[in-house]
Amino acid sequence: MGVELNRVIEQVGKDKGIDKKILIEALETALLTAAKKKYGPNKEIEARYNPEIGEVELFQFKTVVEEVKDPASEITAEEAQKLDPEAQIGDSLGLKLDASEFGRIAAQTAKQVIIQRVRDAERENIFSEFKGRAGELVHGIVKRLDKGAVVMDLGRTEAILPPKEQVPHESYRPGDRLRAYLVEVRKSTRGPQIVLSRTHPGLLIKLFEMEVPEIAEGLVRIKSAAREPGGRAKIAVASDDPDIDPVGACVGMKGSRVQAVVQELRGEKIDIVAWSDDPVRLICNALSPAQLAKVIVDEANHAMEVIVPDDQLSLAIGKRGQNVRLAAKLTGWRIDIKSESRVEKLSQEALTAMMRISAVDETAAANLVASGFHTLDQVAEATPELLAQIPGLDTEKAAEVVAEARRLVAEDAAARAAEEGAAPPMEAARLAAHD
Image (cartoon, rainbow, N blue to C red; front, side):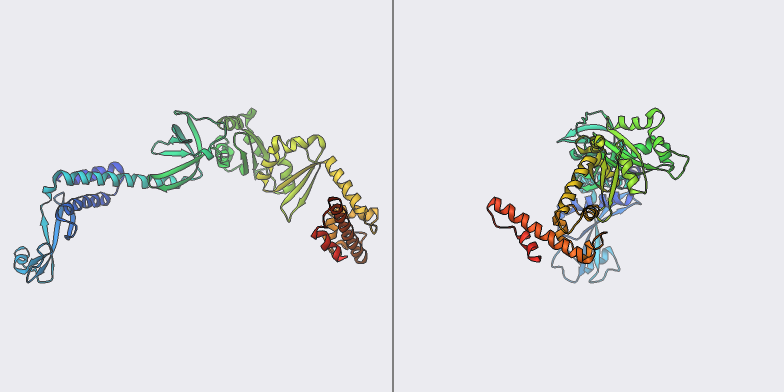
């Protein structure tokens, strides 16, 4: 191996950032592999690096015995004491082998093992470096396209932009410079796999952090973000400083800041809305530019019924429902939008249904509708105790209303069944049985 080995180990370790112990272990493994190929796998051979002479030394261990039965693993006490005067029967004595005879084979094996260990160490270093960067914005150059995936050069390593993380209708060509969101770093047999995304809402957030100093400084916070990649996005922003307009800070002078983000996202439209801890106010902001007439909150189901003027309906819903979908993602609430005329029609239909119950006058019918009862089925399923809480209905009257609703539901079901030539449905029969 030569006296140069110490210097080689030092240099490779320094250049590649690899612990010397790893390189020495690789050399020892290489020489041991070559020795076992020559002497056979059953012989007890060890390889040890000697830094004083800059060589890997080979030792074959034999047991000291009175009478040798297996020369490959045993040595007589007489022979052993020539090598080591203190050798005793039962000792394991290491006999140094001539490592130079392995020549090019050992050198080549060592080179291959070192190359592999260097590669493994580099992969581990890259994995450690990028694992801690998940959630960051990264810059890269498109290197090639591989089965629909985009392979990007990040400098020290490559990353992959899978098809599902690509924006519809965006095209990528080798040499293009891209910003992407680092989703995760996975270990694989081919080394660390760095997965990027151009569709993740985090990309939108990071781009605004880069363009808006107030966000980077913590004066403005992005509370939520939602995207339909390539189409439209919404972000909700807030500030604890009353002197700072969070929306204005993100828009920038003449829209310069938001336009820089739009340009990076290749034309994706972005709505910036003010965050509010009041869910109703937040929904109103999220559905802008549509004007809302009324919002009914259903806390139990985390849902809101939003009523808008007829001329605002299409604006509130958006193209193919995009505006309301993004508002729902942004706020975390389920949103049901209805026009005022639709609500009026449904209310009138509900009032007509309640008026079919003879025990209910117009005022009681209106109170039932206002309390959320819109169909006879809902009244039939209710308990008298529940209805008794509605103004105009005491316990006795409520029981009468429930009984009559059940009868009407059963009659309606029977009439429908007769028209269709079938037996009354089981549900109608069950309700009728309560009467």
